Length: 277
Image (tube, rainbow, N blue to C red; front, side, top):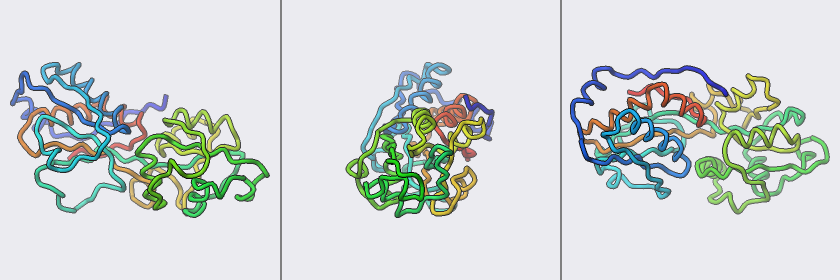
């Protein structure tokens, strides 16, 4: 479902050079947050299948790590950060090499019967805090709003940063869900529901004729282009970080992420891929 072919450019010379330095018998760990664990596990699995000598494993580490921890060799750290990757800013710490992999925009979605023209920041806060609970507050019918709240920690962080609210789990009443597919099923099956999902996933669903409306935010359409150019506010960047040392396994992992399997993995997780530099 929702398949397309996208290849990232990658230096052939750098890939060949990377394979020249083996690390036999040394375990390689891909560390992830709860939100990026699926991407990390699939990437580690792809490396293990194609290059079993790397002895690649996955570890979920929910706490944010500092640069000193990430500077330890023999590991890759796959996390997301708020906003777009900087284009010309110097590295925060020269001990860590950071590569941006993809962009994920978060969109509010409703059933087309609701005809919700846009949402403002104040209205989103009202939904999350419980002060907006009925569709008549949006000029719609006198019917209760079924608020769908993603339990994905990155989605929660994105909304918290947008609203300036530190803990959305304590705001309002809502039905919890996890994943774009689940949100799609709930929203298309309930004309009084409102939820969130990745822009990439929502656009593909609409293109296939699924009854779904993507709601603009602050008057800005929730589109892939708006997410990529930074005009849309709910955006996160997926990054992979390595110790800034000579380690061929880092390039091997990037090589797998740049290939067909890696690109399909990013798309399935709602990311727009970025060219690897």
